[in-house]
Length: 134
Image (cartoon, rainbow, N blue to C red; front, side, top):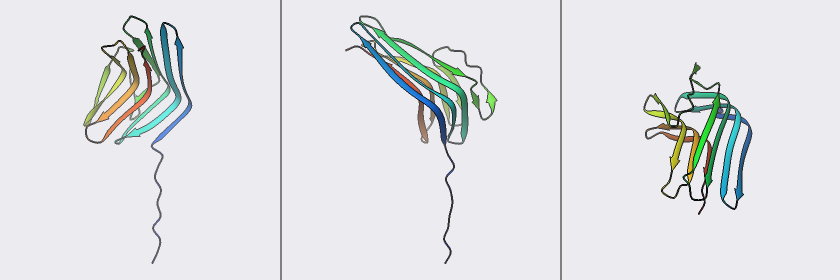
């Protein structure tokens, strides 16, 4: 009886992963970044040269954030990244949200540079930063 062999292709590749949070008496800053992204989510291939998420909150104020994505492609097609919060790209069965920003009732900020959701299949966040003062 022969032995079956196979391989599982890489689903994610990235380099220079970095995350940092800086805390001051009246402010919190957080950032996450990576370079040379290549990821397949539910058959959708996403690539970018760099992906950065940043979040900040100052005591007594609502948090804020931003993200930076360079040379983004989806299935080989270049995407115009506007930098606007919650830029949504519809894909079969789901969506990709760029610069996803959520500000809580306490003012803390969560920024996801790329958030891929395929209903019932996948929920993937790439480069997430959170800043909140409690």
